[in-house]
Length: 150
Image 1: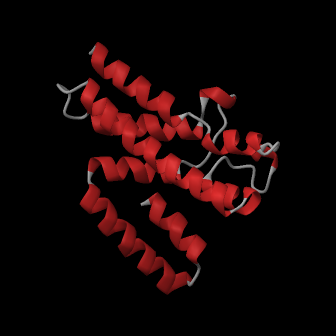
Image 2: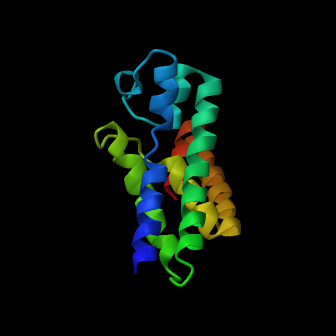
């Protein structure tokens, strides 16, 4: 039981690391005061540039993936720990303890959790939703958001 609590708490704390906020501060800006005010990859792309946006996207996906995998290592005796860790990842990214319980929409970190829990399934769903979204809306941003929500 203690291992499971530690695993879920670790997942929350990893996901709560405010990647976009840190990168914005390095540029002398506050991501919460830019664009949508969201601490996510899309707002970072739009307001801090392509390099920062890609960095946030990759790091946030990695946070979700690594948090779930670490939880599975910590609590090997709990077969559902990956799912509990995935919930903690979403909560950590959306309500980060490090920035006053503010955060992003957890789209990228959620995709990281999907990759950790079911890599093949996550990729199949991602590509299917992107194709479907592009066909309907013909808008790459809409397709990306819908794909991450899946």
